Image (tube, rainbow over all chains, first blue to last red; front, top):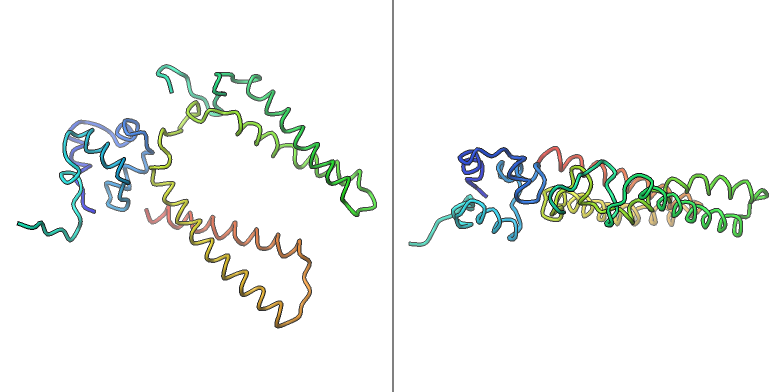
Amino acid sequence: MNNSLAERRTQRGWSQARLAEILGVSRQTIISIEKGRFDPALPLAFRLAHTFDCSIEDLFTPEDWHPRD
Amino acid sequence: MESGTTRSAWGATKAGRRGLGLWGPAVAIGVVAAGVVAGLTFAFSPSETPGLLAVVTGVTALPVGVALGWAIQVDRTSMTGAVERPEESVESRWLEQAAFGALFDGFAMIGLGAGAIAITGVEVAADVVLVVLWVLLSVDFGVRYLVVRRTA
């Protein structure tokens, strides 16, 4: 999955540790998500979207995503 | 965890007991567990010196029993570094991947080992087989976890 997590996080001036603390997960989890090496489970994905006031689709995009028009 | 609650390396019980309040019961549980192990050893050991063997196994089991007593009581949210949702963290995924791989490696080990023993007719003591299998599976799991973690 591609994601805009790092960009949105830095826009808010949060460190990875700070975001991890907000979400209740480990800092390594945030690192792995931002690198695209870990896809979060739905509950975490929803909390991420809620934290950044956006939808899950705004945060995460499949690598071969071709939206239907 | 309530805000303002201090965290520590060893944590506290759900009732907030630390130090002796945490370790006292843990040691008591450890002593009971060690006593049970020593008693079973004394009762069932074919050794000519069951008393000595019981003491050795009891002493060996004591730290494990104390650790168990600590683990039973501690409130993990009171420990430094503990996250609220470990099940959603990437480390849980690594654990699952390593355990899954080790499980199938275990199937292969047991199958190949049983075949080799059947073909060769070698007689191997059951305790030796179990210990070797335990060590191999433990190493397998540990290596797999490190590899998954390194590539994350």
